[in-house]
Amino acid sequence: MHNDSNSNSEPAVAFEAVGKTYEPLGTVALRNASFRVSRGEFVCIIGPSGEGKSTILKIIAGLEHESSGSVRRPQRVSMAFQSGALFPWLTVEENIELGLRPMHLPNKKMTEIVRQQVELLELGGLEKKRPPELSGGQAQRVGIGRALAIDPDVLLLDEPFSALDPKTTAELHDDLIKIWEHTHKTIIMVSHNIEEAVSLADRVLLVREGQVEREYPVALPYPRREQGEAFLHIVQEIRKEFFKDSETQRA
Ligand code: ADP
Image (cartoon, rainbow, N blue to C red):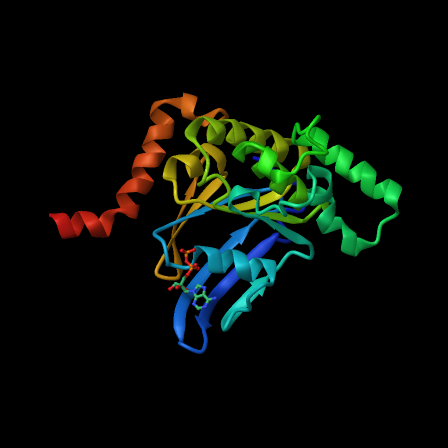
């Protein structure tokens, strides 16, 4: 596990009985969501669509506010989206730099941070290219580099690999684990894929009907998919719970 020495005292994120209703239609996205994420932990949130996963990320990011309950938010947070969500008219370097601009850093410092991200994300040689010239995997790496450049306390990832082919996704999984081990960042990622969640996270949260219904710790060494039975056992456990309603209906 990658929790640092502070992990027992202050969680990076904590939700206590959080509810969220979107006005003006009164759509209930969260009913009673409670969970904690320790510093340095990698947590994946999975669940059926429309049940509140993205709302949890948006509340952590401060883009939305809870209607009830309490939330402990990180001070500095950044988010990477599906396919990188890059600005097509900016170069790779400029896209990474974008999040740093409001910080008014000296040019030299900014250039140094961008260089570090290019190295960490293995984007050397692509610095002057623009997003239309990049592969899907490269674009997503730029998106993650941009999110990491501001040195966030928590990195949020909203289905970052769902638009990519399986080979690129597997490569990016390996890259993400390397980045996590290198930076010790707290990572919270929404995924719709159970295998992906079990491949990556310390803990998988199953969200349904606006609540964290179950939590699954995954104490397996990487690469997880090579752990055979142990990996499949956890995937099966989660799958049973994930599809329990549809199984009942079919039975
Ligand atoms: P998930 O990420 O699990 O697919 P969301 O958190 O996106 O779920 O959505 C949960 C519920 O909240 C859904 O019914 C969705 O339609 C609704 N919702 C999400 N965002 C908004 C919004 N900005 N305004 C109104 N309703 C929203």
